[in-house]
View (cartoon, rainbow, N blue to C red):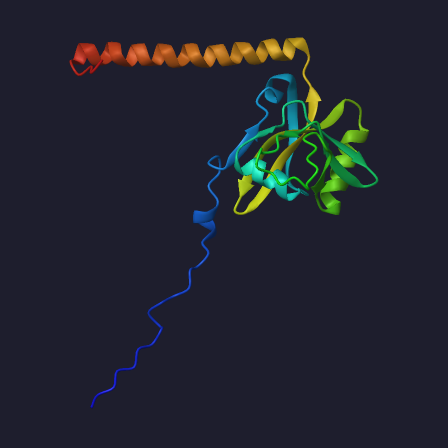
Length: 186
């Protein structure tokens, strides 16, 4: 009588591939797009957030708003003010849900010291740029910013309009050349 021995070598445990796990832009929860118009961002940092369970659930549902939020530095710690995380209706009744509570940011000492030095100089503030998933962690991108003057905003608008016009001109000139050659597909 023959006996067959089956081994489990063919079954491999799942390997963790960092390249597959993190896809930038695909896991964005909330963005503060207006900031780029009103402020000049000089330095960007990534920070973790100290959250409660109901907040993580609401972020999974995408119910977050960080427009108008900023970072306050006190007692060598950083706190996020003005961010709104709307609680879900199915959140347990024993949890007290405060959508506007201050949340602690997780930064190391070097990052905190660099932020403190920048903010001590006049005119600089720390603001929240975007909120996103990085693997299984919720991260926030914060930036050290200085407010733009009115003429800075106007020059940015002129640059943007010139980029649009340049793209339009290039599209029409390429089509014009292609028509004379006979290969335009418009």
